[in-house]
Length: 289
Image (cartoon, rainbow, N blue to C red):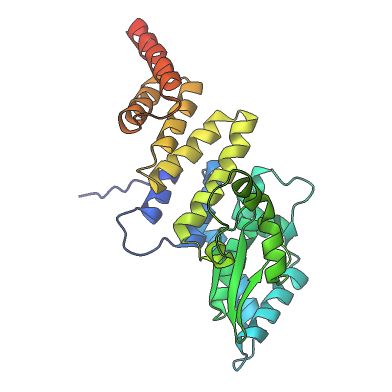
């Protein structure tokens, strides 16, 4: 009797890591590395993890066994930003490669959230209580030290003061003040730890805007497939997957998604436009039958 094994597709691999029915949080580094299979289905994710493990081992050798949290943080940042030279890709900030961890490891250039994912893995590996923060407009990281919580800029490792953080919030507070909405929430409201799922969603939504702006529908459909896996009750993400399918000429898949959106989003502002597109797609399918 011969045994046969099927190799999971990149989407199946990603879905297995982030399945909502799992009680534990997804393995952030592995799931984030999988995102790059949008561009290269043959990417060896286990090799990416091994490359990070090698960096972790190098860093660990530089950390004294009796080092406190603040010393560990300083040594991590010296290694990460000084020795390895990780920094923002200022020359091509909106390149998709900036969100792909294997590219980040090769070029040492990325964007705040991708750099933060790698920094967090190394920080946690040397015993720091570190977390990501979905701060408005710019992803941040935090680490617990003897004096409390340090909030850091992931592009440089710089510690941010309360005043600097409030200044960064001003563009987001101003519209609320002008519209007469509720008072500004306290700073702590914006510094809550982001879950692994939250971080993956934010990474994918960054790519979503890049691919949608460029009209790269195949890649956008791949992003939307992953967002629907992560957010199965987000009907707007399912709508956007349907719109990408429609652009690709995959009418049956588009009809299914757009119908689900209309069924579950009564009263949405775009209902009429989506219904019109759905009608056209169905007419096309009938004509082709």
